[in-house]
Amino acid sequence: VDSIMTKSERSRRPPPSSEPSIHAVHFRQQEGSRPVQLLSDRQRKKIADAATRMEVNARTILYREGAPAASLFFNGGGVVKTFRELPSGARRVQAFLFENDVFGLAENGRYVNTAQAITHAMLYKLPMDALAEMLRQDADLEYQFLCKVTHELRDAQHRAIVLARRDAPGRLAMFLNMLDTDVPRPADHAAIPLSMSRSDIAAYLGLSPEAVSRASRRLADQGLIVFDGRHAFRILDRGRFGKLVTAL
Amino acid sequence: VDSIMTKSERSRRPPPSSEPSIHAVHFRQQEGSRPVQLLSDRQRKKIADAATRMEVNARTILYREGAPAASLFFNGGGVVKTFRELPSGARRVQAFLFENDVFGLAENGRYVNTAQAITHAMLYKLPMDALAEMLRQDADLEYQFLCKVTHELRDAQHRAIVLARRDAPGRLAMFLNMLDTDVPRPADHAAIPLSMSRSDIAAYLGLSPEAVSRASRRLADQGLIVFDGRHAFRILDRGRFGKLVTAL
DNA sequence: CGTACCGTTGAGCAGGCTCAACCGCTGTGG
DNA sequence: CCACAGCGGTTGAGCCTGCTCAACGGTACG
Image 1 (cartoon, rainbow over the protein chains, first blue to last red):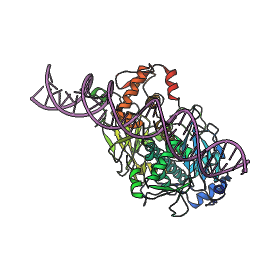
Image 2: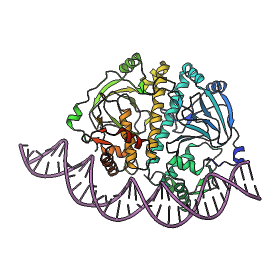
Image 3: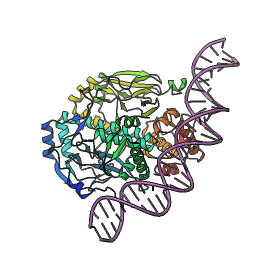
Image 4: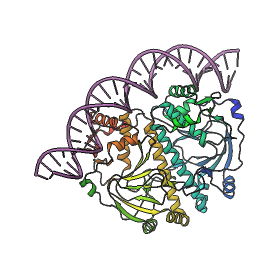
């Protein structure tokens, strides 16, 4: 019903890494404040052994809200979204998940939202039982998970700040800035991929699709950004762009 | 600068439990879906031994955003808020923390927001080093922390849904409903305490204080709730109230 | 090549924000 | 003990901006 990936987009993005990994910022003091790889090679290998590697096409539903939470997923490449269905039938996107992200955490043994692939994606599916067993054995691994979940907590809180903003261009700018800084991408290309549809962005930012469209046009008209087609953009004026992002 | 606790309010609410505890919903399947005590008596004792027990008055700042994160806090009674200062000088309340909540998680060794007591509160202050050591030794304890952080992640995501709503009465109703269900209170009294100021509520819901005031009046006028003074309320018509809460 | 559906654009409306004044409570100092 | 000053909370008026409804154009996919 949404997502507008083309055939060509589905076929590029080859699986970039051959073992699952997760990235996050540590609790404790580190050199930089950038997210780092949390797992050791040994841990990655162990997870890879216990997990099923799978490739899915765009729009594949990975699990549904309310279903028994059988597995945890590691994103090994591609983009996935999680969303909740509201009573009215509207959808609210909870998060976009990129390479090195983890998703499928349960509450009381059930998934709290639905996960769907936006692009072709490579995933590692780890049964909950296996995970529990590994966490019991490997306290260090458990610590890394604690880091990762805390990192996601920060993300959710950051999003709350975004949603508290009133102006659509400001919200959109914060979203695009998030993509710029948080999303892993091949090289230092200026072009930042925008894999998700405008409706998905709207559902994530709590705006109507029209508002997203108008805000995009406004940012482009002001010369802050340009769109390379509908699924990529570049930041032209980082000075003014950053000003808008932090202008609360 | 905010909080309007009276002397009498400050002196009631005696510390209800003598050892730190944390409540959350488990990952795995359990009987109910209500939050439960996560720590064993042994773990609570151990934390109590390593932690400093402290009582603070309303308005006490516990730590500031950006300061080195020296300790983790357990709320043993009372209400605490965490907030962030925005460039413009505005404040956004991140969370209200009640009994059995944990706060003070760091990012890269520093606190990401400021914590301030709203009421008189009893707290356990656990040095990060001691925590790290305990987590290393006790894998089960670490698992409980993972549960708790995941629970907070859910809270943050729930709040994102609240913020995505447009109408002020709806946001306020969701907030009051959250207090009704999540906040521990003495007995099955119909009166639910509203410890925080209206400005705090506004800063939490991303509304102006005026909007909160008008929304309160509206809910009261419609007979959904009544205020017992400014710092407590009761839900009169749970049917229609619940309808508003889930009316998205 | 055709057919949906996404995305864009426009017009009108509703609801929250801003600015400003007023009220009530607290805590203070004379 | 009382009066005053300060602040949080409420109420009102006008503006601004995003939502709704509707129509159109382009792109993706069969």
